[in-house]
Length: 248
Image (cartoon, helix red, strand yellow):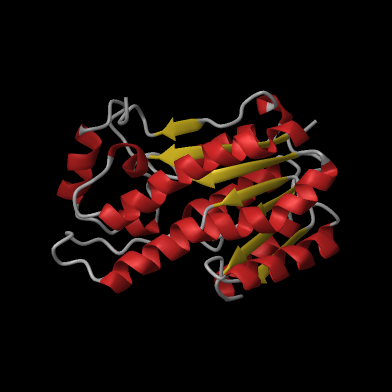
């Protein structure tokens, strides 16, 4: 039996990178997958086909996770299409890095809205369904930068630290109805975005990591599967660092 057989998983920001890997690994573990991104582009279309080819039910939705009403409308449609939501993975996120002295209000607001407000929006939208089911797992993708901070990323760090505090609070609020909430804090993960960095920059990062390599999106996705599955039925309010030992 696959770990997520019979479950429906909703993943935001899924068209590429870590979100796409989470979608595929969840599907390979038997989950039906609803996934969102800003627009239903070629990446979304190819992902929808890839997931359905795995023999599960999958559907992509164009949705802006930073918009409250858009999230509620999307979740209502997903519940109508799939019947339930067993796990929500809040993965949508962006960066707008800059030193504080150069950071604009727009750069601050955009990162907070996309990274942090989206978690509030989507959790608020699915909570009624999960409370009615008396079951559910909410998995919020934070970052080691949210745990330890990073110069030039005060907006990103603040958003990811906020996710950790939010996750702990929601775990306490919803636990009595058997709804769990946890955060994952990835470290340096090799994606299309990080692959374009100069080799000396990547080597510098790897030297800071005890395992001496970057992580794979699938390694983050495997942790999501654990938290979304019944294997973690007594795990709530926690932050799991997936960072090769970088944050110790």
